[in-house]
Image 1: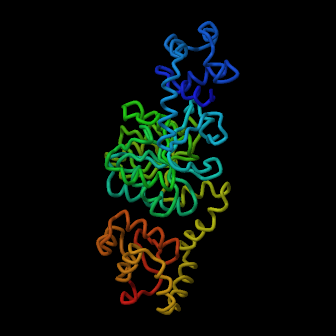
Image 2: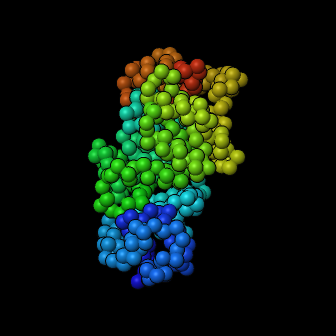
Image 3: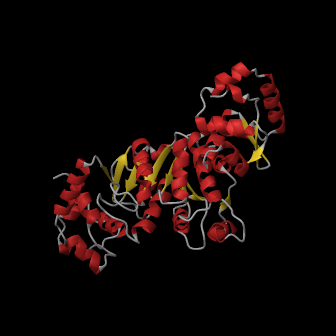
Length: 396
C-alpha cells in the first residue's frame, strides 16, 4: 500500500492535532510504522493524551482511500509533509499540516518572495484600495501574494495581484473544491488557473468556526512577511499576525485614523512594534538584499520620487511627439487609457481620478500602479500627475 494513504489516514484522524501527530511521528521510523503500531507501542510515546492515543489506535483506512480517490477524480494534488514539493518554509513551523491539498500549480515558495496580505471582511473602500494596490505592485515586481480569499481585504488583495498578472496562493478554510464565500466563485476559479488553492482539509470539507483561524497559520507559514491592511479590535487578521510573530515572520501594517474603529487592531499592532508601511515599496525594501531581481522595478518607482529624476522625466516627456506616444499607448488596457485620459485634465487625488475616469476604484488603482511602473504617472503629495502629453483624440 502506498505511504500516501497512511499520511491521509493520519491527517484524517478525529481528535488528533497536527502537533500531536508530529509527536507520534517522531517516535517511529515512518508513518507506515506508526500505522501498524500497537496500543502498547503507542502508550510509550510521551505527551500523548488519552483521546489522542484512542485516535491513533483507530486503523480504519477506508476514509483515506476515499479521500485519495476523490482527489484523483478532481485533479487535486496531495503533498505530504516529507515530500520534496512540500514548502520547507511551511514544514518548519511548529505544527505544519500533515497533508496539503492543492488545486492549481503551487509555485516554488521557498525560492520566491511570498507576502501574506490579510484584513477584515468588512473593509472600507480605502482598505480595499490599499490591499489591491500593495498586492498588485508586489506581484508586478515578481512576488507571490498569499491570502485567505475571504470577503473584503483578502479578496481585494487577490484581485489586485491577478490584475497585475501575478501569482496568488489562496489558503482556504474549506476543501479546495468548496467555494466560500459563494460570491467568490469566479475569483477562486481564476486563482486555481493561474496560481494555487491550498488547504489542509480534504475535498468536501465545509466551513467551520475553527477551520478559518487554523488556516491562518498556513498563510503566515508560507510567507516571509504578513501585511495587515485593515483590522478592527477583534479580527482574524490579528490571529494571522500572532502566528507570524510566533513563526519569526515580519509583520507589516497599513495604519488608519486613530478614531476609526476599523483600524483599532491595526494601530495596536504598530504600537506594539509591527512595522508601519505606506505602500509596497516599504515592504519590497525589506527583501531587496535577498531578492535582487526586485530591485530594478523598485528603483524605477523610487526614481519618480526624486526631484531630479522627475525634471528629467518631464523634460523627456515634453520632447515626445504624439506619434511615438501613441505607439506606447497601443499596449495599454482600456482601464489604463481611461486613467491617462482623466489625468490629461490635470493632477488628481485618487477619489477624483476614479470619478473622472469612470472605472471602478479597484481597476483605477491597478491601472495607476502599472502606469507608475511604466513611467507615465507619478504620485506627489497624494495626487497623481501625468508625465507625458496626451491627446485624447489619439487614444482608442
